[in-house]
Length: 200
Ligand code: SF4
Image (cartoon, rainbow, N blue to C red; front, side, top):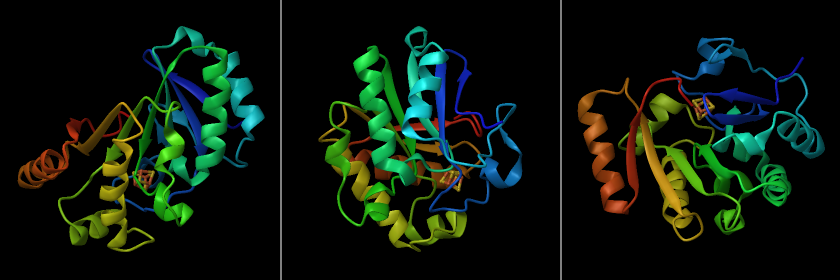
């Protein structure tokens, strides 16, 4: 049976899709059966109504936050994702965090960052590499090196519509690259976080 909403600690995570614009070498989709002990592969993507129903059934009002996370890239279903959040925000005042590769604009073929206003409270964007060439080596992006530039642009735009925007890197990267990523974040005026591999 497909897992739609599932708890990790005091957060409730939403599993929208297997699809992703990247094929990162470290991705849990290719290195394991799932994340944090869950088998998250989806046979059929849940509808907006199914996601809303499951989030409510899991008692979202008792969690610190709702995290839009995967199993693939949640913005592959950007409008469905926001439709779910709109209904959940009308139901209870839970904080909503989006964990993303930052490709929403590239996927849509236009800028869609403004649609997050009033719905997404935190957006955490995987920076993954300090330049476009390395990014594409690690992430094997379907947009090629444009995936890196599109992700940076998405992050800068998101600052106008989302209260908290974070660039994150995983702690398995080499230290020089982590420091170079930190400088990119500082220059863009975006909060920077080094996160533990496979935690979210
Ligand atoms: S962006 Fe995330 S979901 Fe997509 S391949 Fe990379 S780690 Fe996996």
